[in-house]
Image (tube, rainbow, N blue to C red; front, side, top):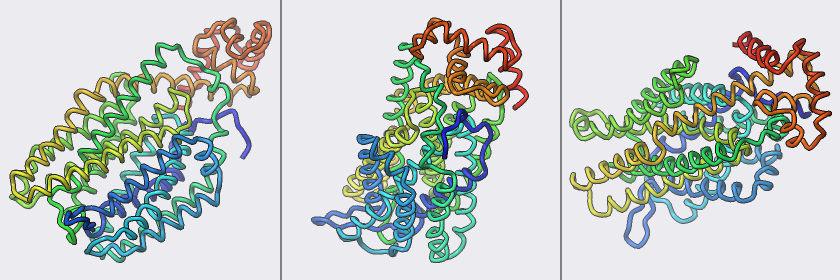
Length: 476
């Protein structure tokens, strides 16, 4: 695919939504469908050993790709690597997921056949979704999550073997859409002009601090999720009792999130609203779990729905951070999901430690309280709603400028160098500053601006901005 001057998709893509929903559906099948498999070592029972092995495989792959971005880029540019990953996931879906114990070979196969290729596929989707403006990407992510939850909700009423066949087909479908989309050339579609936008150091430092807190917050939320995934678990029993309730709540949450994202009122911060709703759902589950359990309603099902909704919100923010910090969205996914899934793995280990003290009501309530405390600490002190609001406000402002930039390029037919000058001009750079950042003479910048004015039929910088705003309004 050839390099273009327009990188951000300005409308949700049905192809990307369907492809990512297939990936999400496979995750739900692998993580939550089937029996809780245990691993016995030195008289100690490790519950959810299959999920733990998958998570460690994913975290390992994320860490390697984050440390060696060239290696990650080479993998993502290889159609054969993506096809092979899909084939491995299909093989992993057909692995026996019956009650009983895993041996060391089974754990290794779970990590290799499921964990590592699942991480590669997720990072590939991170690069493709990162081509969209953050708000558009968020719409695609929540739509994909909602579709996957609804389909899995319906499938949960059929036999497990029938659902296994469906799950085996999902990786191939997702990888096929990735290959059609052209994930290998996605990095080349980043607008060259945007790579020249060096933001003020103060803003960059603030964004970096926010993203660090976000990673720690994601790890803490993962810890809470891991604890709940071992809460009241029993080897050989269903890995996620009342999964249908979780999927139904999750699909309703996605509908609410999409409705919020469609509203462009400046007073309505859609990203912060989704964060608040997801945490509220989680905390409601923690609060009412003991009372609801006596009436046959699973509080942990509500918590899990909130965790999955929160994961989707973090996916959108990982893309936003990649835009703001000028890094490949694939690498942002490696870092973000590496933290989230590492926290989840630690949570499963901590849950097993709690279970080692017995299955008394006091131990169970202690595990529940610890999980709720981890989520509360993350929300109040690590990555707060105000942080979420501040980061998403920067995202919306940046996305608006990028959308104006793309609209002018398309309407006026600017050259690559003119598009680079336009990107900096729309951000308020003086001609002297533009010349410094592009390493050209000021007279060259003056010439490019005169050509831009002529093509846009304007006569000044302010008229150019007004022209870009009119074009953007026409697109909305």
